[in-house]
Image 1 (cartoon, rainbow, N blue to C red):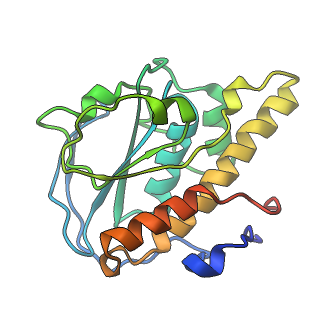
Image 2 (cartoon, rainbow, N blue to C red):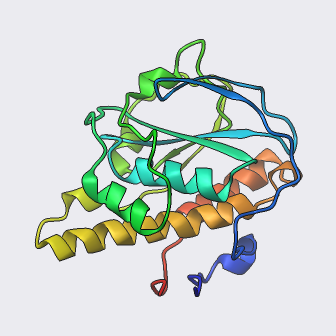
Length: 213
C-alpha cells in the first residue's frame, strides 16, 4: 500500500511501512471499566502516555487513540477524551476503524476530567485535534506533558449523502494515520525539548498530497 508523501517529510523523519518493532520494556496499565487508573512512570525508551483531545470525543480523538495504540504498541499508550463528551462513539468512526482492521473494543466517549485526577496516568504528550478544544482552558494534567495542536476537520460536521459522510471520516482517518506514523518514528529520547516541540508542531501542519490507495 503506497504511503502519503509530504513536502516537509525529509525535515522530519522516515515513515515506516509497518509498526515499529521497539525493543523496549512493557509497562502495566490497570483498567477499570475502560478507565485508565495507573501507568508505570515513563522512562527513556519506555512507555509514553499520549492523550488526544477534541470537544465531543466521538470521532477524531477516538480514531487517533486507536491508531496510536496500533502503530505505537509497546512504546506508546494512547488515550482520548473531550471537554464536552457526547457520551458515545460516532458509528462512522467505528466503521472507519473496522474497515482498516483496527480494534474498537474499549473505545468510549469520556470527559477529560478523568485524566486530571490523582490516580490518572502521568501524561507525556497531549494533542488537540479540533480547534475548539485547542482554544479551551484545559485541566492541569499530571506529568507536565508536552502539548501540540494537530487540527483535523470535523468529519461529523459534514452534511450530505452517506457516501460523502463516509468519505469525510475516511479523510480524517488518513490524515491522522499519516501524522501518527511520523510521530511514532521519532527518536524521542534523542531530541531536546525545543527540537521535539518543533517536530510536533511541524507534524500538525502536514497535509496529504495524495490519498492512500
